[in-house]
Amino acid sequence: MIISKRLAAGVCGLLVTFTGGLAPTAAWADDSEPAKQPPKVELVLDVSGSMRARDIDGQTRMSAAKQAFNDVLDAVPDDVLLGIRTLGADYPGKDRETGCKDTRQLYPVGKLDRTEAKTAVATLVPTGFTPIGPALLGAADDLEGSAASRRIVLITDGEDTCAPLDPCEVAREIAAKGIGLTIDTLGLVPNAKMQQQLMCIAEATGGTYTSIRHKDELSDRVNQLVDRAADPVVTPVAVKGADRCADAPRLTGGLYSDRETFGEHRWYRVDVLPGQELRASVSIAADRDVNRDYGVLLRASTVHGREIVRGEAAGDGRTDVVSTGLRYPRADIDDADTDKPAAETVCLRVSNSFSAPASVKTAPGLPVELTIDVVDGPDEATDAAFFGLGHGWWLLAVLVLAGFAAGLLWGWLSRWRVSVWRTN
Image (cartoon, rainbow, N blue to C red; front, side, top):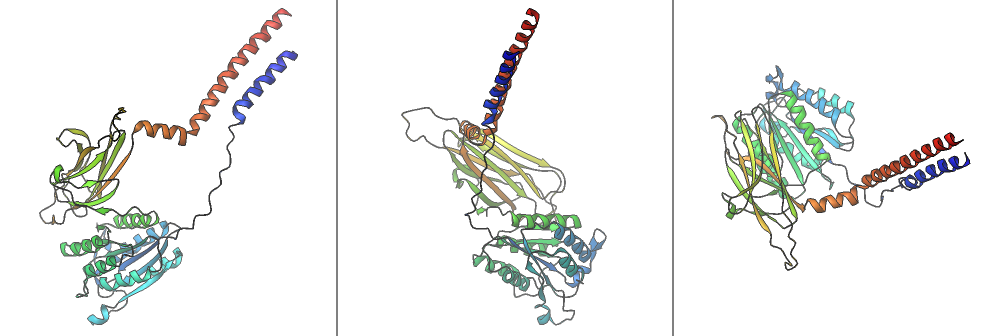
């Protein structure tokens, strides 16, 4: 029995040996990095007289906007500094000069007090003119003094009524200052002229335009834009695709923006070295009414036209964005005589099958975002994951071996004890 106890102790010791060195070590974060400045967002709400119209889900535009604001204020991330500015909320008269100055900051940009902000919004009553240009200038001033992400979200149901201060020119002036401020526009039940103006404002600063016809759409879109400010994406680089691969722009890794007319094909080129993998994705936004049944195709081919791989997506209902992607791993070359292997030119073609009702303008084209990434191929990526991120695999392997060894020893010990018992 003394021997059996020693063997049992040996088994336990073996398990401790295998697993004792696997205890996690504490990893301390480097606190030397400077704290990031919180992002700033200002919501600019149209409170002009036209917001009394009752055409959004059976209620007035103003009521729908207030309900959407309540939803948005409940969901604002804690690290976002948010403010609210109004236009057309205070002057009920007909003097145009006075009405075109009617914009004020309803809630200052800062740490959000949800109850206070909701109370301020609840007091709004549709009143006056639509001075979009002055409101944008005021909002830009409200967001000054920060190097963090800054975003203006304009919600309006009509075009500016205070020309010659053209809001599109105002947006261009803001963009020309190089202060990194983005303006997104949302049009409530828009007409063609209003849509064109809001698209121009958004395009001038790299923002987006969205047509809104339902309250839920307004809540969802504003929430998305506030979240985008909290987690900003890389600003796309403007690029113009070609009609054929031979004339296409040569792209490297990054995010690119373009516009593509309905039913158009656009070409781009990417160089891929042996052992590398091309990862590409494309998103096309339906920023206006489109017909049902549509699709997006991203096709990779050689310069001679042979298809390599493709990605495609299709739909048949209301949509904001359609996206697809592809991956192309190029085989490595094992040739000692090749000091610098030649890059392969991959032709990327972006195609869409969108169409629009006769009443909808097709110009400018639909917004396109193209993401390009060229990384080390699957072998290198797998090795990096295994030896770098994959420490959990080592733990699993050691535990399996420890269990196997312990099982063998325990089985041998049990058989030995039985044989000793029979002998005695």
